[in-house]
Each structure stands twice: as C-alpha cells, then as structure tokens.
Image 1 (cartoon, rainbow, N blue to C red):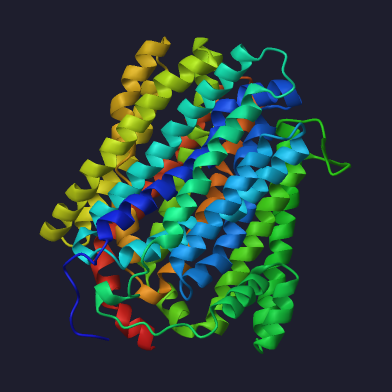
Image 2 (image 1 turned 90 degrees about the horizontal axis):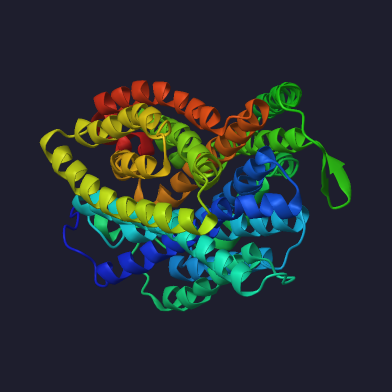
Length: 527
C-alpha cells in the first residue's frame, strides 16, 4: 500500500462527475418510464397491477442483477469508460424496442434487455468516480449521483407523460400508440451520451486511496468465469473446476432445495391471495405468480453461488466482505429501503391518476417536476451534511443522517398518502420527498469505505444483486398483489412501509461499529 492518500481532485474530476451523473439519470429514466405509461399499457395489453409490478420490477431485476456480477468484475479490471459507453448503447436500443412492441412478451423482452444493459452503470460508475474524487468529498459525490437518480425518475414521468399525451392527441387512431412513442423518445439521448463516455479519460485505479492497483491481465476471462460461477447449472461445472470441497457442493445443493421449496410455497400463497389469469409468454401459458417467485428463487440461488464463488476465486475479497458486519448490514438496509422505494415509485403515477382523477399529462408535469426538483436538491444538502457530521462524529455521523431519513419517511407517508385531494398530496409530498432523499449518500459512502479500491466493482455488484432481486424484484410485485387482492392501492402502498422497522435497528448497529470495521479492513484482507 502506498503511504499517501490524495486529497485533491484528479484531472477532469468535475467533467467526469457530470457525465457519470447524466449516465445515472439516463439509466433511471429508461427504467422508470414504465411507471407513468402503466395505465395506458394495462389498457392496451389487458393486464393487471400484479403483472405491471412483475414487469416493472421482477423481469428487469433478474437480468439487471445477474449481469451486474460479470460486468462488475469487468469494471474491476477493464476500461470502465468504454464499458459504460457500450452498456448505454445496449440499453438504449432495448428501450427503443419497447416502442415497437404490441404484446406483453415483447415488452418483457425489452425490459430484459434494459436490465442487462444497465447492469454496468453502478459498478463501473462507482468504481470510476471514486478514482476521481478523494475520500473526504465522497459524500458530496454520492449526493450528486443521488440527485441524478432523482433527475432520471422525475424526467421519466415528465418525458413519458408529455410525449405519450402529445402523440395520442396529435395522431388519434394511429397504429403507434402514445406509450410506444414515449419509449422511442426516451431511447434517443443514450446514443449521444455514449460518445462522451467513450472519449472520457480513464483515471488511475486506486490512486486516490494511495493503494496501487496493477492491471488485470485477463479481465474478460475473469468476467465470463464469474457469469458461469453464478448461473444456476453452470455453477456446478465451475465449482468442480475450482476444486470445491464435497461439503461446499452439498451446502450449495441443500440451499437450492430449500429455496425451491420456499418459492413453491410462496407461489401457492400468492395464488390463493390474488388469483390471476395466465400470461402467454413465447406461446407458453404461465401463472404470473409462478413466474414472479421463480425469478426470485433464481436470484437467490445466484446470491448463494456468488458468495461461495468469491470464497474460491478471490479469498482476499471474501475475507474483507465477510469480515465487515457493517458492510453486510448496509446491504440489508439498502435492500429493505428498496422494497419501500420501488414499491411506492412503481405505483405513484397510477395512484394519482386512479385516486385523484388526474390525467397522464397532469401527473407527468405536476408530480414529475416536483419529484425531480426535490430529488435533485435534497441529496446535495444531505450529502455534504453527512460529510460534515462524519468529521465530527466518525462512523455515527453518516449513519445518523441515514437513520433519521429512513426512520422518519415511513411515518410521513401516512400523512401524505391520505391527503384528501391532489393539491394537498403534492404539497405534503414536498417535505416527505426531501426527507426521503437523505438516505442514499451516507449509506453508500459508509458501504464503499469498507472495501479496498479493487473490490468496489464486486461490492457494488453484490449489493445490486441483493438490492435488486429482493428490493426491486419484490416491492412493486407485493404492492400490485395487495392492490389486486384488496382493490385498495393506497392500502397496498402504505403496507410496504413496514420494512422500515428492521431498517431502524440495523442503522443503529451500523452507527456503533462502522469505524471499527473499517479499521480492520487491511487486517481482514491479509487474513
């Protein structure tokens, strides 16, 4: 390890932050645009809330999470700027495909492609930006990235609602529906942004942290090996190649058996709670609940395979990750908060349209601008605040900010979502959204300080896998399931906030031991 940790910005740091923030915004725009278009899609395709939750979360989540692992490994060894440029080209093309689809199957295929393409955004982007900005400024950096997420979320509502509404009004009776046109418009900017990413300078890996990181001699081979190691079925071949012990293989097979049994039970329970007509995918009739829990089960097997695979292929990274309870708890908190956030975000536009009678265009403009504005300003205030508090109270400073915002926002949601009319809802949503924006910058800063620079792509991928499969993959589906079963979307959305109870407990524990676990980082790496 080098002795000197840099405290000045690397050349081009501000430009890189702008480009990477825009990439993050585009990622969320293309991912979230489905929410504002959902009522029109449901009408044209004849599906329910549970199916839209499955499409919004589960189908996207599986491939986003699965491919974040090999591209995260690739981000730790290859040119990250080039990787991001290729990725945005891929997901923009997949978004454009949704504009040409006329069936649930093709729309699911488009979401699958968007998931694969966007898988590189967080692993490569986080790894890259940490090599431009010093440790003491990373709360601010993550605040900018969080603001970019809000820009993408709000922008998706505005662009999707306005574009769809304009097309339907200007071209009534057209074979191309407004929601299809909106997907085509959303796809276009990504092709331009890819050029800027391709030409951006690649910084020295680990230079900001004073940790020399030699080039990876075989990044693509390692990435493909990672994909094989986590993909169910192929993982057994890789385990044999790596000479896994019989006991490890036995534990793996037992885990798969238990996961399969649990998913069957959840399919039966979900079907009993809210029976749904079968979906026709590629000519095959499938119970939507069986599809949902099959995907979640597949993701859980991938998580098991990843944890075991890292212990065989990268013992140092395995020791660092397993040796930090803070890191594990941060991932659990991010997952639980994602259950809440994605469950609410997937249905916010539908809630406004259904409950208060707003049109798609009204929802897009009023709620879209509100969400984007607060979402941009909030993290830029919370991030620097968490950096300042961290200096005064190491460990507990950032954790305190995250605890406050994640503990208070569910209580505020009861006040917001029981508003008597749309105007009251929007005014109440202002302080609620501001509080809700404060959790991500401090939590991410805590989490990525728990690993070595060369492990940030892997750590980001592991976090994304857990957060996406169990957060994005479950939150929207549960809200849709409860909405279909009860006929009360408001009740379904408020129920999801119960996930805040374990979040509060975990954040208290993180605040008590974050510094201790970070101090043990080098010792854990050495074994």
